[in-house]
Amino acid sequence: MTVLLSLLALLSIVRDRTLGLAGKLAWAFVVVILPIVGPILWFTVGKRYPYGPSGGNR
Image (cartoon, rainbow, N blue to C red; front, side):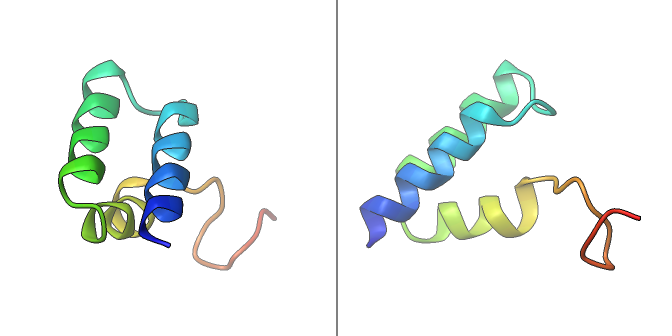
């Protein structure tokens, strides 16, 4: 489960168009070093979602 979560986070980091190379490397480092907390941090704090707090585009 931890490996799958880490892989999904790494894939999401690589595909993120809003981050530069340094940001991607920093987040990948966090995910690899902290395999449980890192992906959770990425999906809650780091990832920018294309929709607002209402949950969808208007």
